[in-house]
Image: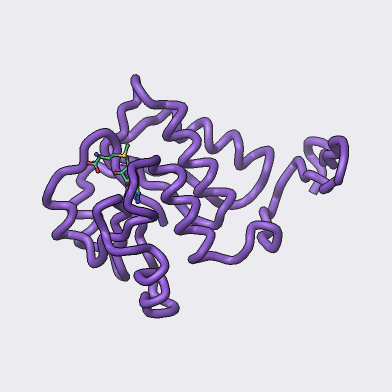
Length: 171
Ligand code: SAM
């Protein structure tokens, strides 16, 4: 699960869409977004209709409460945190993880609310890159993942594009 706080629907719809697409493709079950963004939710529903899987974007009205109520570990991704390799290797196995990423400015209390503050390198970059790298380590490899109910499936090719399309109405 990924929680994105500080989303600005008017200013960064594309960035948060990329965060949602990367989270979906790389193994997250959900993206919680604060504040909510119905257009983003619909965009990802449409992706799921075509490309399968159960990933969804959901609005979170009180992100602090969502963090406090999380039944597992809360890992805040921040360039100020402890080194990624060491931190991820030390996480207990089989515990649900909530990855939290920020936007332009992260409220200071997030550092205390999180169980761990983890840096993917100690340089500023992006919430999409940080979440993608963390998910890559925490979930199964993308090629092994099944997106059930897909209408479109890519048939991987070394060259060119091949897509298998299931006709509408067929099982
Ligand atoms: N100066 C901002 C702050 O208050 O942390 C940086 C915001 S950055 C544009 C947006 C988000 O990207 C951050 O909240 C964090 O989740 C993620 N991020 C950026 N660089 C990171 C890094 N080196 N390691 C982990 N996460 C990072």
